[in-house]
Length: 261
Ligand SMILES: NC(=O)c1ccc[n+]([C@@H]2O[C@H](COP(=O)([O-])OP(=O)(O)OC[C@H]3O[C@@H](n4cnc5c(N)ncnc54)[C@H](OP(=O)(O)O)[C@@H]3O)[C@@H](O)[C@H]2O)c1
Image (tube, rainbow, N blue to C red; front, side, top):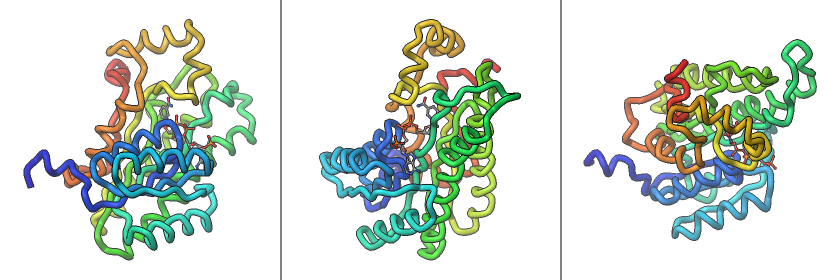
């Protein structure tokens, strides 16, 4: 296989948890463009269907399943549907998460209910959905690719009330390394992308404040926030044969932000 062909995903099946979200749907479309059939696992039926339709418009098969990724039985059901329909799962992307901007509190007073919500949304969703998919990958015995979405906040503090989010994303990065180590024997690689702010509805309110946005952009050497399109190349790399010897890595997609620290 030539080095460029190694990036292709023809014949593969991808499962995108949170595939109806801003980043998840962009990743689902990119996986479809690279040739994979795509299962969209998403809590919102409407956004899941929209994302699947976008993938089908590219001429590849895709369907959505409505799932709360934090509930074991639902995650298992989604995996069963994927296998019934497409016969296998080769690639999984965890794109459920976020919420940080909605629950900003001083660290010393960080409320337990907000803490639990952020940990459920970012960490439990990743754990539960991945366990369901990986058990299938291990049983199938054909290896696999897992791609998590961490954040620069796994690595960098921020002078704003982000305690729960940094804890959750720090754990997602740690789990990426732990799972890579444990599941290498099954031929399953586990990597993560760690973006800085990506221009999505989740962060629109924060970035809508010109002073806040100027502060963010001022710290990013490439002088802008991310776009969803900035993330997909790295995901295709981690999902494809091009990254066969890469596992346990967390790739900053941050315009150089972490390079300055
Ligand atoms: N946007 C950024 O600046 C940025 C930066 C770094 C990292 N990230 C990370 O990138 C990931 C995606 O972020 P995003 O901006 O694309 O957020 P998003 O648009 O809210 O996407 C997340 C999707 O997951 C869905 N979801 C929520 N809870 C779920 C559950 N329990 N089960 C299944 N689906 C569920 C959401 O549905 P509802 O909307 O109905 O809840 C939404 O469609 C997150 O992990 C986030 O932390 C984002």
